[in-house]
Amino acid sequence: MNSYGSFPGARPRRLRTTPALRRMVAETRLHPADLILPAFVREGVTEPVPITAMPGVVQHSRDTLRKAAVEAVTAGVSGIMLFGVPEDAKKDAAGTAGTDPDGILQVAIRDVRAEVGDDLVIMSDLCLDEYTDHGHCGVLDADGRVDNDATLERYAEMAQVQADAGVHVVGPSGMMDGQVGVIRDALDTIGKEDVSILAYTAKYSSAFYGPFREAVGSSLQGDRKTYQQDPANLRESMRELALDLEEGADMVMVKPAGPYLDVLAKVAESVDVPVAAYQISGEYAMVEAAAEKGWIDRDKAIFETLTGIRRAGAQMILTYWATEVARKLGSAHSG
Image (cartoon, rainbow, N blue to C red; front, top):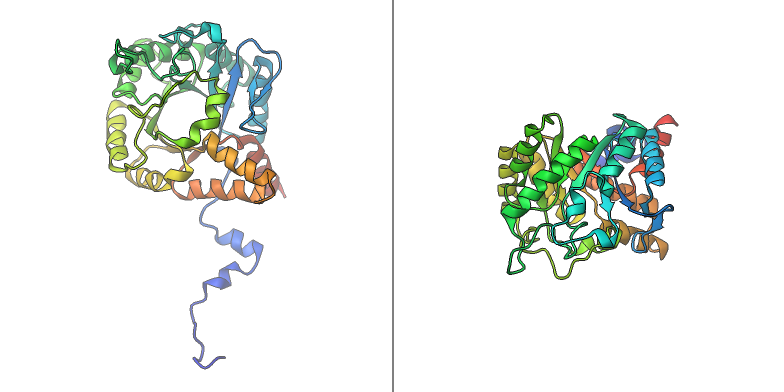
C-alpha cells in the first residue's frame, strides 16, 4: 500500500500480465479468411519474374499462378485478386487486350477457376491501365485527357469478358464516375447477376503505388490526379461511397490502407456492406526494406500493420503477405 491507500483501484495492466490473458481479451483478431492475395500473371513467360521493388513477390507464369492459388486455398486465404500483364506489343490506346477473351487476364481467370473452382474467391482487376500504351486507366480524348464516358463503355466490355471467363468478383479500380452502375448493368445484361462488384470506392492518388508500376509493367507518364482522389479529402470519399452503393456495389474498398485508416474507419461505420482495404505495394516494400536493413522486426511489423487495418474496420484485407500470414495464423491456432 502506498501513501494514497489502495489507489489506483482501476489497473488496466491486470489484463496484460500473461500472453494467454492478452490473447483472451484481444479486441481484434486476424483470421486467414480475412485475407485476399493480389497476384500478377505475365503473358509469355514460363518462369516467375521477380519484382525488384517488392522482394518475395513475382509476376507469375500461368503454371506458377495455379500453384499460388492452390497454396492460398490450403492456407485458408479467402480470395485472390488477379492482375494481367500483357506483352508490350499488345498494348494500344484503347487497351484492347483487356477485352480480348483470350487476353492474359481472362486466360488466368479460367486457369485459376479450373484449378480451385469455388474454393477460392476469384477476383479480377477491372481497369485498362495494364493494357494501354499510355498507361492511363481509361481511353483518352483528342486533348489527351481521360474520357470518362468512353472509358465506361470499355469497362462494360471488360466486365463481360471477365465474367464469361469465370470470375466471382470484379474490382473496378479506375475511379471513373458511374463505373459501378455501368458494370452492374453490363453483367446483368448477359445473365451474370451472381458476379459481385467490389467497388474501389476511395482510391487515392498515392506515392505508395510506386512498386506496383513495376509489377504491372506500367507505361504511365505523368499521374492520375484527375481521376484518383486527393489525399487531403475525406468528405469526398463519403460522397463516392454513397454513389457506389446507389449504383449497386456489393462490397466497398479503401486503397491504400495504412495511410488512410481514418477513411477506412469512417467508411466501416457508415455502411452495411462488407468493407475491404488494400495494403498496397509501397506499404509492403517499406516493411520489407526496413526489415532487410535490420531496423524493424519483419514478422511483428507485418502483423501489427494488418491488425491495425482490421481494427480500423476492414473485414477483408488485400495484402501480398496473405498466404504467408494465413499459414502462420493457422499454425498458431493449431498449436
